[in-house]
Structures are given as structure tokens and as C-alpha cells.
Image (cartoon, rainbow, N blue to C red; front, side, top):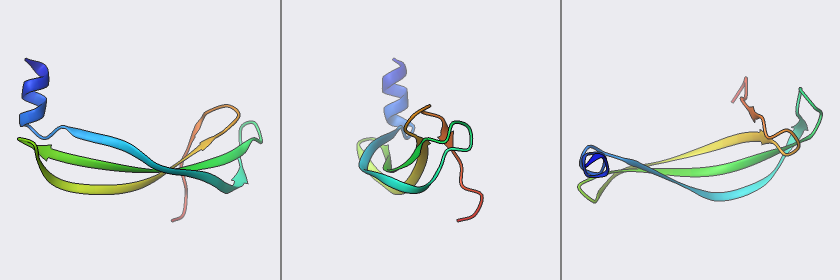
Amino acid sequence: MATTVAAMCGAAEERVVGTHKAPGACPRCGGAVVATDVESERRILCLPLCVKSKRKYSCSRCLRRLVTLYS
């Protein structure tokens, strides 16, 4: 029942498009930073509504999610 309601109300699907090394180091442990390109798609009744692309940063050593201060 919950999956049916989520499919009708605009559930979002995320998929990883690509991953690459980013400049800089983790402020917590000093590990390498990894940039992951993620594409999310909202659908209503199996029809695509919008597609958004995001870049997420994380540490490869401690797996902590990192946030950019300036874009």
C-alpha cells in the first residue's frame, strides 16, 4: 500500500552517474575527498516530472559526508 501511494505522489529515484577524486582533504581525518555525481528523477504515475543533477562530496577514509562552503 505504501509503495503504491509513493508511486502516485511523486517518488524520487536516485542513481550514481559518476565518481571521481576531488581536490582537498577531509578536515576530520585527512583522507582523500571523492566527488559523486547523482541524478535524481521525480515521477508521478510513471511519467517523468523533472531530473536534477547533484554533486556530493565524501571522505574515502572515514566515509563522512562533506559540504562545500562556496560553490
